[in-house]
Length: 127
Image 1 (cartoon, rainbow, N blue to C red):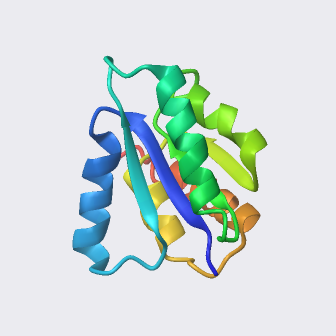
Image 2 (cartoon, rainbow, N blue to C red; image 1 turned 30 degrees about the vertical axis):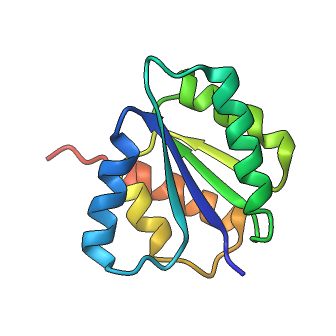
């Protein structure tokens, strides 16, 4: 079993990043699911759906949730999911972060969370 990845983002940010990752890898080494939070989304309804989804994929070695911006609705929803199971939430999603974790599909949830943070930070460079 492997860690599952959930991208909870505004509008289509997660879909766009997942598309780029799929173009890069072909078949992804980890299961990645994007969840779009639009400005019309009802956070309470979405939270129920996300909790059910987390329970469905509960056979994994945990769920790494990547959100695009701390303090935003996607991040707040993700933080509410931590009580559901073996979940880590990392905010500040960027493409280097996503690519980094896909390079290490055999790591544990905690190790992948560390890779996500390091990939995100190291992907920001003053050119």
